[in-house]
Every structure is written in C-alpha cells, then in structure tokens.
Image (cartoon, rainbow, N blue to C red; front, side, top):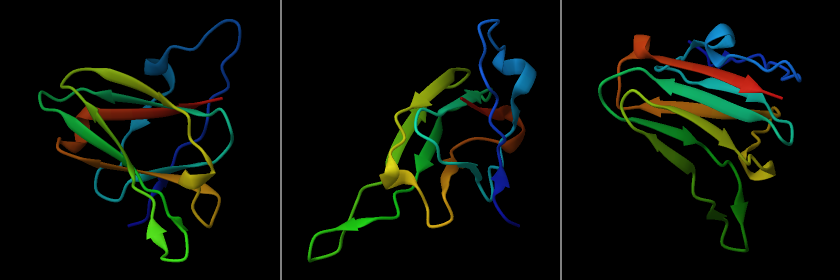
Length: 115
C-alpha cells in the first residue's frame, strides 16, 4: 500500500476540536501531508503503550553527503501531542512530509494536520 494523505484543517477563531477532524493513522505504510510552513501535526496515542513518531529527513549535507538525522517524537500511552516546526529538511521530493509510526496498535492512533 501507499502512504495515506492527511488533508489539513484550517483553524479559525471558533477553534477546532481535534477529535472532530482526526483520522486513523496508517501505522503500516505511514501518512503524509503537503509541506507548508507553519503546519501542525496532531497525534493522539490512544494505546496503553508509548508510540514513536518518526519524521524522515531526506536530505544530506556537505561534501561527504552526511545524512540529516530523522526527527523522532515519543508519545506516552494515552496522550496527545501537537508537533510543529517542520522545515524544508522534512520535505520529500514530492513536496510532502512523511510520518512513520512504531510501537503501538493501529486502531488506537489518530492524526490530524492543522493550518
């Protein structure tokens, strides 16, 4: 299968309840969203074990083509996280940001992206 695209939700002055717009995370193949400065990823770990979220960085730097380390966020059991600060180093060749998961069961993780 392929990664599942997360469609961003625009946050207005009225606010947004993440539970109203989140979708099931694609644990096996990962998710993606179109890169845009200021976007925020929301992840709810509804499992009773911690979840590792990895944001791959596809770039290398320097004459030695040194790989830039992936961004890794650990989300405790039963907790949500708002993740912000995605830079051009997270953008894949197709213009998306990839989101990978490990350490929990598929049905218990939901995600959303906010503008």
